[in-house]
Length: 198
Length: 187
Image (tube, rainbow over all chains, first blue to last red; front, side, top):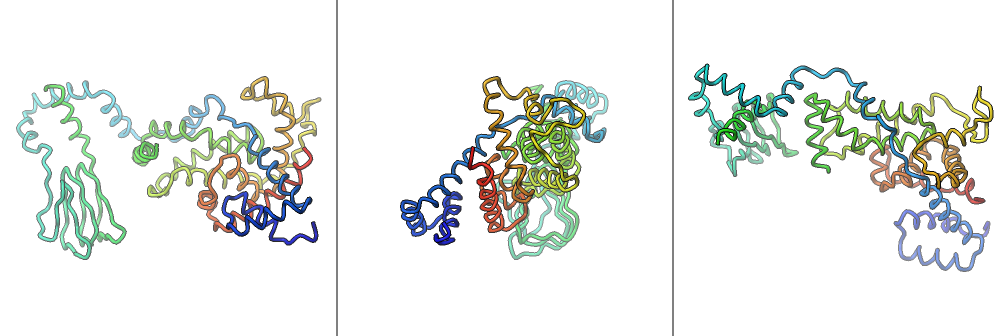
């Protein structure tokens, strides 16, 4: 094998990685047909891979997830309450209904509904409930978007608040102030109440 | 699946542990397997896998959601395992008796797992030889071999996980393969 060019072994590995040039592949093939040592070397490499791949796959031990969960720090109260609301929509709805009945908030809410609203500014474009800050423009005021998304391709010189929607930043996008997303839990609860009474 | 994972991660970022439980369920086998193949010890592997998930949970804010989650998670796992290997350079010999036990060697340690069905016990010796060969690799070759041939990840993804240039990963795979060949050619 000492007489064989070093590149032959290199080609073998390239071949095994699946990124070999056509010419190299041909040279490797021709060489292997004539050289016994290299043929054996190549066969051993292939066998090695097969052996390593035959190592039986193993699964995590039983109860693994539970033990990981026990390691985590205690979760905040807020999240627990939020999840309880999500898991018990009917109870939430009933409780809220009572609250609304006694408080007389109903009219307040029906006006505040799920309307798409945003800060009026001539530089902003709107497309299917998505407010767009076009590339190359600079908006010099705070922007509030309600029940819709915002896509920032240009720059905003101020704060951006998104209520009940998502914010998409283009890589060129830029906001100098704070960015806030409010995923209104209240909005979701309200929606669920309406579904119950429909 | 990626969409579900991304949604769960958003919930985890907000502090929802139940969502994290689902993430653990999805990735526990893969992570445990990486750890086991790197460390070759069920208890150490479980410790490392648990630590991986704990670390992931505590540092979820540093995960870039535009990138693949598994890449980030596997990076934590491999780094942890490499750290553990470096901390205590163990001298594993499958035939060597475990200290303080009589007639209990690494083969019986392997067999103690309930994951292996009866008919696989016969190939246990072969499995042990393969694993021994993997363990003889220095950790930098071991991690690429485990990721490439046991997790069956593409080379580019391995490069992302280990934060190495693709060329370096290729070289390590080549050297790892040659080293393995020397140990396994006679099987």
